[in-house]
Every structure is written in C-alpha cells, then in structure tokens.
Length: 239
Image 1 (cartoon, rainbow, N blue to C red):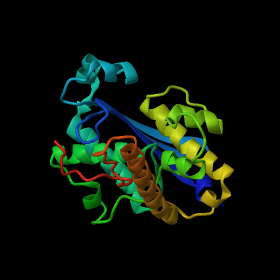
Image 2: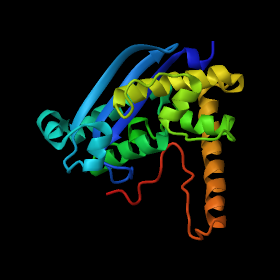
Image 3: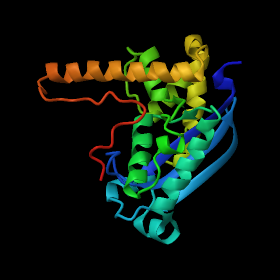
C-alpha cells in the first residue's frame, strides 16, 4: 500500500495577505485523512493583532470584528499549530499543503515574530518533513498542461470536490485528497516513499524556480529573482 492510502495530514492557513514573511494567520486547519476519508479535524481562528485588509476579508470572509471577538491570540494559535504539525512529523506522517512554501514560511515567520520555538527547534534540529505539496508535484508530472495551477483548477483537473475555496478546512481537506488523486494517476509518484518524495520535491521546486527566473529575465525583467527554496524560505527579512 502506497503512502497515498495511508494517513495524510491536510494543512492550510488563511491570512491577512500574500507575503508569507509579513502576513498574519487568521484561520488555520489540520485535517486527518486516510484513503480520501476525513478522520478528524482541528480548526483555529486567530486575532492577528493587525487589521485584516478588505481584499483579504473578501477572500476568506473573516472580518476584523469577528477575529477580534472570537479569535485566540495570534501567538497561541501559531504555537498550537506548530505543536500539532511537528507531532505528526515526529512519527513520520506526511503533512500535505498546497503551495507549502507559503503556509510553512508564514507559520515560521509567526513563530519568530512571537519569540516561539521554530519548527526545527521542536523537531530537535531537523527540518520539517515529510511534506507533500500537490502544487509542486502536479507541476512536475504534468508540466505542459495549459491553464491555471491554483487549488481550484488543479482540483477540477483531478476530479476533487472543493466545497468552499479559501476556507482553511475545505482547502486542507482538498489538498490531502488531491495528493492521493495525483498519486493514483501517476504510479511513479505513488511508488516513492514519503522521505524520497520530499527530497524530490526540493529538487523539482528548485528546478522550476530556476527555469521561471530565466523566463522572466528573457522577457526583460533583468533583476527578477525567484526563490527556489522548498518547503520553507529563509526568514532573514521577517518582521
């Protein structure tokens, strides 16, 4: 039985913005999934401590008033999420996140912002792993497919129902189911163990970033830089 039939942990954040080093957590979800079936879920609503911009509210639907009234302090939410995720990694269970570099970098920036132990600190100095990122895998196994690569579009490609896009729980569940669907369609992916698949994604993401950077520079963006780090970017500029 391949990894895609075993326990997978879907993970997603909804946030105040699109820069993972600066944006804050608004909602988070961790969903246990086995063979495509949900086994359990944990959800968090945070008071991010900053105003949620109107365009972000329009995406995920969490108002400033609701976050302030119902949300837990941001440091408590970041700490709890980090503890839950690292608990799975310690036992070798893969965490599935669509475009993992965003969510894991943002969570790491929040931990640093609040003076909390990093993911690596909680793992005894090891990097967070294994991570499975359907975005990175799909882009590798079907690189010439036209069209968008956002979660909604890729779910549609693989026949995965996304009940409510930009709802953390719905996105986390869809990501886990999508990972399984990609492995079902591509036996070479299913045949890799989680640790080896993690290592391959590091390589694939770096190769994609280098190619995309070359493309941008050929188009005239001479100073374009595409960060090739996966699944976690450096936090040198975190605020």
